[in-house]
Figure 1 (cartoon, rainbow, N blue to C red):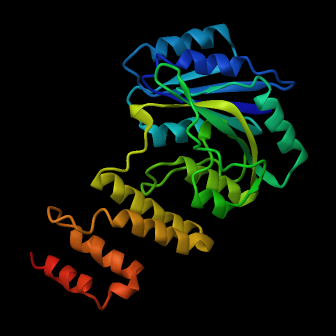
Figure 2 (cartoon, rainbow, N blue to C red; figure 1 turned 90 degrees about the vertical axis):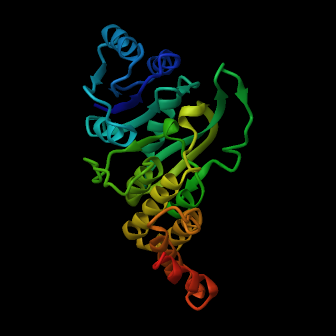
Figure 3 (cartoon, rainbow, N blue to C red; figure 1 turned 135 degrees about the vertical axis):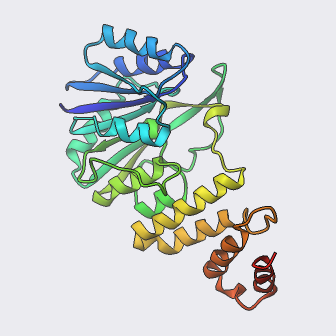
Length: 289
């Protein structure tokens, strides 16, 4: 099998048809399969996926008996992709270029030093309105390093085609909260990323997929993830500690949490100029509150 198309979906009855239509319209000169992880949706998403699987024999749907959540659904589907290459798309996004897969696979075939390819994307909101949000304006048609990918969000998962590597089968540890960039960083341990700075994908933004960064729980999960990345990628340790510190800032003044002193101690360790400051004295007081 030359290529597997990874699809994850949950309660996306409004969007999944457009997503799958954009997959089956692809014009390619190789064989491919479509692996759908349907995460126990409560709407008509399961029936729509089955409808497409019945019509297209190369589509296989896995219905989870209980909701796995996004991270574990990614893991499940990725580990069932048998292709030499894997293309990714989430059930609320869709491809706009029928030659997308062919172009990206052709590039990977010719450039063995490239582990992953991705593209720019346009942004759509509920209702289908296309907005020029400039989210991906910084992208250029060139190679990208691991540090660049980590420093600034650049890779939308629904634009990616990558080469299968020794990181598979993949297993996400408990420290991973949002797994897209982490996955691509793991893949890029075996090569660079190449960007086609053309909008071949539409990224749909709505309330259910906006980044969850405005709660103490989310801030803590992000801080833990960046700490873990620093351990996994020693060359990125300094940048990872900087990112961890940013998320800890949302936790170090919480007087309602019993763990505030722990977060303040870690924050001081990352910002050692605070060890002999008023911040340190206040932290000691937290221990006795």
